[in-house]
Length: 198
Image (cartoon, rainbow, N blue to C red):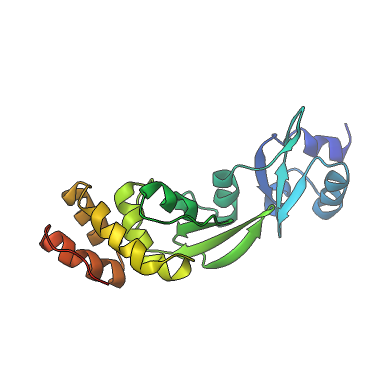
């Protein structure tokens, strides 16, 4: 078995690798990386990051978002929040976006990983998984980024807030809300009968 074949035995389909991962198995990393990409054993998904693709009858399977993000951040503490998730709340958001927000503790900015764009936003606190309460709070804090009728959305958000568990919504505002969300939901949560007028 030659050196390149030896490296191949360590690679697992569906897994994302950093260049530094291959140094454990190769004494000529750059040369082996070039050959592995040429043979399509590895696909470059970002600077210094490579996917060993799974193959099906339909072709190569792209990396799963969570695996891609975990290797990019070198951290499993993050939350994927696609803006399209707002549409499921029923508050008037209808636009489709091709950018997923990644709340995390390490990186900030817009990055292309694979063939997709991710907007990394550093946030001190975020839940382990998405909830309606978190999404509603997050929507108010990020409404200026969205191409929506803001006044209409805020009116519908106020109505939606009355249908959610007030304690869960209060916790989401307290734990994850920014200035805008705290101000907006403050009146709603203090007086359930109050109507928001933008």
